[in-house]
Length: 170
Image 1 (cartoon, rainbow, N blue to C red):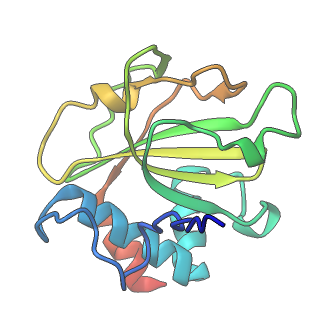
Image 2: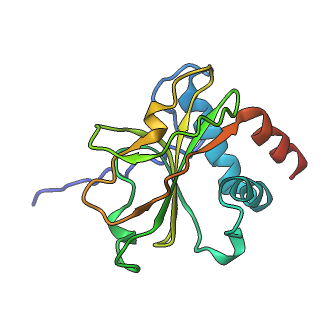
């Protein structure tokens, strides 16, 4: 008889597990902290969502699935529902919220998204996080893969300063 052990997939938002041996100041650590706060505080999550998609209250959406460092916008579990797919909002999170006026486009680039917040088949928020001034090219070019989705044409620029103020108030 052969014994096979299945290693459970690692939860990047579990603070009791090490996270990719990254230094504390790495942008992925900050993204992880944001997602943990959103997972643990419904008030902070509602505040974040009001900043990203003001017309969609958190209470009217399915529970969110929060992931980081993934290539695919959607998981196999949330493919059912609207045949057009969910609304996809691209957020550029950086030191300053500079609205470039550029349009988000579908791309075939190889991507690793900093954060993905999936609200069932209704809404997907993808986040490109920078901790220093940087180009927003990644947040403007989103690879939807073969999955159905409706990509919002307007990028949502958000400053870290505003997120921290929102969460301090929550």
